[in-house]
Length: 322
Ligand code: ADP
Ligand code: MG
Image (cartoon, rainbow, N blue to C red):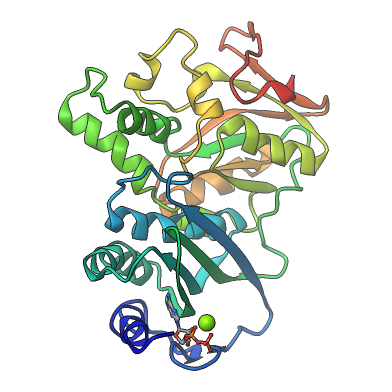
């Protein structure tokens, strides 16, 4: 690696994120030295973002910096883990300082907000690709797995679904779809700047029987819970927390939240008899939650309306749950 690349690392990646006592040695040596917490599991996860695949070409570097950390924080949230450390693998077409500065403007404040220290990484030349490996802590028996959903559990989601899907349509079609500018900006920011539901994940420790973050559309991600838990579910499409603008897109508007990705909300299950406990942690979660259905013994995902009428499964990314 050239000297200028070392000075890039020094300038952009040796400071700016959280300072933590448990980072014994950070950026600058052959490896970082970290002090794990006694009695807790390390939750480790890695997500890669490739330009043109995971974010549209021409996404601002600031949004790319934000999102590449946010999606990893979302994985910590989905495990009920407290984020602590990250490694950054950066592949850049060239050492563009304007780009790097903007990238850090997106990533560093988010890292600081969630108390994540950048402990090391790797910087190479090539097509724009950002890999973040994140590490957090969770007490051994309290991690939120996909496999614990039980018949009778209620299914919940945080926040609002389908916003990012509409945001993506706005970006790709380069059209306003008749929305006023502030609503247009809202949907695009939900695509580029998802809020990681870390507080919700922490509040759900020892309370939710399963959890996942919704990155590939609700049908696919809830499907992972159903498969891992060996159960099925019915969800009420009329209960889905969805913006009016998304409902205005088509008669069968629920296909958007069911099949479009990038919302990074949590989907989780809680036994009905833990409702009081759930209500008591609501204000720690930093977001609303909505009950959208229940876990059942019969495998597969079924959709219905509030009046009980079944919704036929259509094409649109979730046929395999018929
Ligand atoms: P090595 O040749 O031993 O792999 P590198 O030249 O790749 O070392 O990196 C030197 C130091 O800079 C290491 O401590 C590494 O963790 C850190 N580093 C490299 N790239 C990044 C990055 N994108 N973000 C954070 N730290 C980085
Ligand atoms: Mg290296």
